[in-house]
Amino acid sequence: MNVLDLPGPEFVQLYLVLIVIAVIGAVALRFILRQPGGDMPLDRISELHPLEVAYLARGPVGLIDASIATLVRRGSLGIDKVTRKLKASTLPPEGVTPVEEAVYNAVIQKGGRVSDVRKAVHGITNSATARLQAMGLVLSDDRRWSVRLFPTLLILAVGLLGVAKLCVGMNRHRPIGFLVVLLFVTLILVLMFPSLPVIRTRRGNRLLARMKRVNSPLQTSARRAPATLNDNDTLMAFALYGPNGFTSGPMADVGTVLAPPAQGGSGCGSGGCGSSSGSSCGGGGGCGGCGGGGD
Amino acid sequence: MIPHMGLGIGWRPELALAIDRRRDIAFVELMAEEFDPARPLPAPLRLLRERRVRMIPHGVTLNLGGAEPIDPKRAKHLVDLAAAVDAPFVSEHIAFVRAGGVEAGHLLPLPRTRDALNILVENVNRTREFLPVPLALENVSALFEWPGGEMSEAAFLNEVLERTDALLLLDIANVWANARNLGRKQGDDDTGILFLEQIPLDRLAYVHVAGGVERDGVYHDTHTAAVPQGVLDLLAELCARKTPPGVMLERDDDFPDEATLNRELDAIAAAVARGTSRRTGEPHAEVARVG
Image (tube, rainbow over all chains, first blue to last red; front, side, top):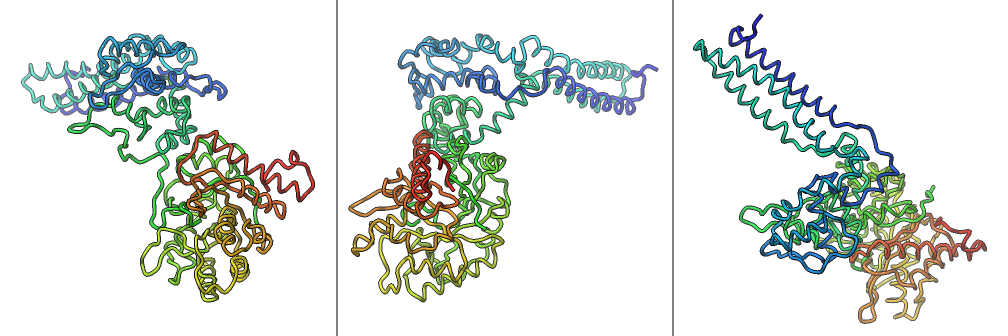
């Protein structure tokens, strides 16, 4: 039986079933291709440098942003809150990573706009991920292509069948409106699937979730009292929770510069955005606590 | 039966990381009004619970010393929070915080009169009817004494505990502050040691330790500074008489870094060990843990 000869309504039903199967198959294929799974041994987690954690959490942009944060924390870069640009201050200390060095040089050479710095440094970020790949936490470039391509091909195959039927329908002067709508939806899926972020393996996903969970005290303290954290803790908080992890202090200023500009506003600034903290206290009325000499 | 707890601290989000890393913390005190029993605990507290760290809800708004009846909603909040965290007991203050609908914004001392005592006892007993767990009552610091006092602070405390069968949350910093600010003025005990001799230590549930600031000759128990040596010495005196089931640090503002906080906790543990060692005759090294 030639499916292209099916009456329109029956073909549409078949197409809907096939596209659902293709989407489920694409999701399953993405899951399977993001090997390895399982858990990384606990004792190896402490081997990860905060910059590696930043890449694990948010890919090349996460690594670049965390490098910027490191250099600001050390005083090698400053922030112009008015122009939202970075500016070079003191030379970076010895022993900085190649990405940090590239960020510093890009600020000098490209004028300090964050988007220009990210573009200039993006190409070398993969060199910083060798250990993460060896640990099975992030995908190599080849594997990322596979994860993007093969699931998409499944959906595309069904879409091509739909296009073929569309041509047959047009030839026979049959109604094609419903099929056009379905093909439009299919096109969105074909464009969407390859654009989904593909950084981590399943093992990397599990590790990141675990790290965020066990570091929730770090997240809470970073939001409420960033000045009490040392360099390493500050960077780990930035790496895991991103620039939005801070609502005050120098790291919040970094977040303002790294975030896209708010429409008609200057972003959150070091005064904070008023976002709810990870501690989610319920609040209440009354005296506001025992401090102040009455307790 | 009062459970043995050990070293503790008042949980504040600002201190979440330092508290999480301090593995000898056996209990944390929760400011009851800051938590909604119907919602999950903040993630850092869930981690502490997994480590079996005990949690003690500590209220500040019940107004046990006030002339108004206890608000059932506030009492229920304390009850619900105690259930949510499996608390062995809860605590509140021997103080009043509102009158005529006006909030004082502060824990105010009670006049030490028989009338005030009777009101306090009635409110505590009413509250205990709601509570499925024991209630511990905390002594507050006072920068002044109400006129017309009919009894000493120790006598007042003794009677309220006896008539209500409540436990004692002894704020040793407040004992020291009151001795300095008021005892010295009256030519009385200005160290707090006499006070320790006069109160029922067998009802001790746990102890608060905190640091404050001195301004114009008056000591303010602000919970924003390092614990003074005088408070630590008084804590050692207490432990030379009875080792408390739990001793905790209160820090409410001007939060220090992790290393400084650890030094504060170590100093408290050392004071407990010093006092206990005096009582038991065992050297410090053998008495390594609180309780």
